[in-house]
Length: 318
Image (cartoon, rainbow, N blue to C red; front, side, top):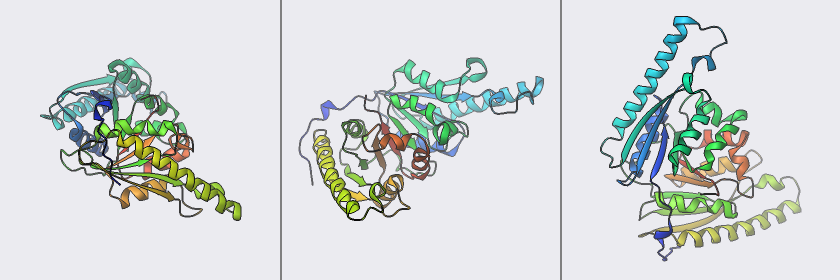
C-alpha cells in the first residue's frame, strides 16, 4: 500500500539534540547512529556527567586523597568522553558543543542533570545508548526507572550497544507500533522527520493474547474484537503517516499477536523488528493499551534490554 499525499512542511523541526556520552560501546554506537541524522541547521549538545564517587561507594569508605583521586579520575573520564564524542562528529555539518557536568559541585543524579540540560537548551531530541553507563542505566531500567520519565518530556532515541548502522545513512526501514490512541500517533511526525525520502514503513498493532488467556470462547471473541480494533488503529496511523509523505515512501500494515502465555508485547515488537530488519522502532508513550506500562516498571526493563533495534520514544506533547 503506497501513500501519495505530500505535506512534509507540517513536520516538526529538529534543531537541538542532546546526547549523553561516556566511554562505553553504547555511547559510541549512539554517536555513530546520530551522525547519520545530522544536518547543517542542527546543534548537538554533548554532555558527560562526572559523578560524585560517594554516590556509589560505601559511606565513609573513601576519604581524603583517595576521594580526591576518584573525583579527578571521574572528571577526566568525562572530559575524554566529550572530546572523543566531538571527534566522532567531526565534519558532520552540524554545530557541536561539549560540556562536562561535575556532580560533586552540582549535586543531584544523572537523569536530573540531563533533564535540566534538556530544559536549558529546549532540545528537540535526546539520544542515549541503551547500555551506556552503569549508573545511568540503573535509572532507566528496573524498579527505580521512574526518574527516567522526566526525560520523556522530549523524544528519546535509544541506541543498543551492538547496533551497526549504515554509515551516514538515515533510517530507511521504520517499524511503527500503534495502540490506536492519539497519544501513540504523536510519534509519527518525529519519526517522519528522521526518515529518508525513500523509506519503507511498517505500521503494526499487537494483539496481546494474555489479555484473554484461558477464557475459552470469550478468549476467541475478545481476540477477534482486539483484531478489529487493531485494523482501525493501523488504518488511522496509515492515514496520518500519509500526510507526511516524502519522496517514494512505501507503507505496509499488519495486525500481529503474541504467540503464547510465555510471550508479551515487548518480545513481539523485538521479534518483528529483527524479522523485518527495521532500522528504527517507533513507539508513542502513554498509549491506551498499556504503552505506559512498557516504559515504567518491569516491562520497560524487558523492552529496553530486549531491543536490538534503535528505538524512538515520543511523548504525546511533542
